[in-house]
Length: 243
Image (cartoon, rainbow, N blue to C red; front, side, top):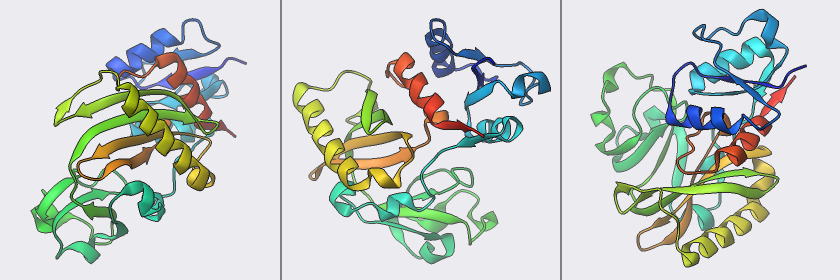
């Protein structure tokens, strides 16, 4: 049996880096070049998938994979000690009169997440399902944002991706790294049991509040930024379970 990872046919810097990372690994990354269809003869050998969330879900169904991810309302249940902001979860209709809030659809597909002066300013608002589930939070200013690929309750590789309102993958300072790991350790001690074994966690610095958890994302569809692709690949594989 081969250890195949189905790779999205969409060529991106991340997928190319993972392909290179697989060359000296026990994994074979294959795009299959047949849109989103894995040929029948390869499905038994596919042990993981990486790509856009819709692509990954379709391939997982074909290849009998379980894609691990946090529960839909997970972020709203994390202690405010770690989020440093109030986060609510519920149907869109509960928030239509809110103003100046950050809002994000839990399925990531219905509308673009962002800060809205009024919820009704969301593009295409009139066509949205008022029962679709969303997250909202107070508006905060992130000075730094960092992506972490995590398994076995350890950060395997990490990369900054945003600093002072600009894309930035430069290294953290020694102090920043020490503070982030301290927050991570405290967070995992309290919340690790609520997460899948392999996951991506984003942490950052909120202006005036300090280090905080941003969110959790499935490893099988998360961008790498400047993370070590070899280490990220292992987390991606662990985030997919062959049934």
